[in-house]
Structure formats: structure tokens, C-alpha cells
Image (cartoon, rainbow, N blue to C red):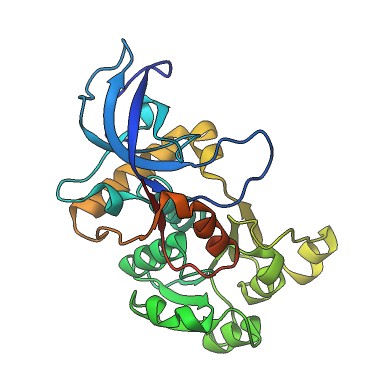
Length: 294
């Protein structure tokens, strides 16, 4: 990240100006909120290179609070000319999409990728990045969100709530299937994703759990779905493979500088309406990024 090279013990306090509304609580006790953008109001003694008042974006527990404390190394400057609200997603959704497509999914020009939940913040980022790298994109979303997804330029948009997704994907790919699947809702679409993936060389990257668990047996892998299944978690990537994460962030910065990634336009909710924002996420009624505005 571009926040400088600091010791893990160094922290800064970021006054939350715009807050990303995150999904429902997974366990208790839980401090709500994960991603926030705001200004630095205090720094630890060992912090260098971060100035008071600087606009930054970062991730950590407690983003729904007025103040939050983060490791200094987790701070990323808001890009010049962007507002704090527009920067939401730069340290979660965009790196997630890029990491799944490139180092994990291995997408290359001319390959085909199936992106589920394409109307969500990560899905929209994935469609944009995949098209930039000259992949053929098949996106899924509910019919009410197709207009927003089509505006991103995918080659095909399918109904995520009706029809036979696997059959339609196989028809679009001449029966061979896709090279990469980004699976956000495995409880609902995992079987279709496996069936729609190219045998032997195809990759399914699973990054969501919102629709519940999915299962596959060893018999399925050997005799029915001979594909690569990859689990993705951004936190695990930063801890277990920091070099890969660093490469992703450097490539992300280059895409921003080149104008490939435009400022975001999240839907804003007043802080008091936080429960409504979370309910909209749970009901899949939201499109793109959501932000809590204090």
C-alpha cells in the first residue's frame, strides 16, 4: 500500500467521514464495520509519513464508530481528485476482484470468466477489470440490476434467479465452459458454476458465503467436475502471501493512475439508517457499494 512502510505496532486514529456498511454480524461479541474512509486525527509515536488531516482509506474493526484505530500500514491515501466516499472499495472490493482474477484465477486475454453477483461492489469491479484484460465476461444478476451491469460492458448478462445458468453458459461457450468462475453465492449457484467450468483447466474461485454452504465430494471431483476450486479470503491473502497482496496493490495503483478504475458512486445511507442498509444487503436489494454517512 502507499501509506508507507511502518511497524505493525504503529497505529493511527481515523475519524470516520464515510463508512462502508458491511453485512450482518457473524458472531458475538462483534464490533461492526470493516472499511472506512476519513481523515487522520492522531498517530502513534512510531508512525512516519502520515500527516494529521490527510484523507485515507483503510480496513479494520469498528468502522461504524466515530473513530477507529488501525495499523499505519493499513492506510491507503485517497487518490488525488477523489472524495472519501468515492474511494470506498479501493482496499476491499477492487483488490479482491483483482486478486481473484489474476494471481488466483490466472485470467488472460481471450479467456472467458463467469462473474456471479455482478451488480455488487466486488462484482462490478471484477467485470471492469476482466474487460480491461480482454477477457470475455459472462455476468449474472437479478433482472432489476441488469441495466447497471450492462453499463459496465460485459459480453453477456444472465438472470441469476431464473433459468438454467449452466446450460446457458455452455451454449455461449460452444459447450466447453468458462476458464474462470468468481463464485459469490455458492449456496445458490455452486452446482451451476461447477457444471459451467471448463474440464481439467477451469478454475472456480469462491469468495462469498451469503447464500449458505455448498458441498462437493471427492467422487464429484474425480468423476463429475474435474476443476480447480480455490477459496479466497482477503485477510488470509495479506497474512499468508503478503508479496502477492503487495503485487495486487501495486497493479491496482497502476490501474487507478491509468484511469481504468474510475471513482466509485456508492449509495449513501444516514448513519441512523444503518440497519436499513444492512437489511438491503441481506435482501440483495442493493446495487454496488453502500456507505453510511455520519
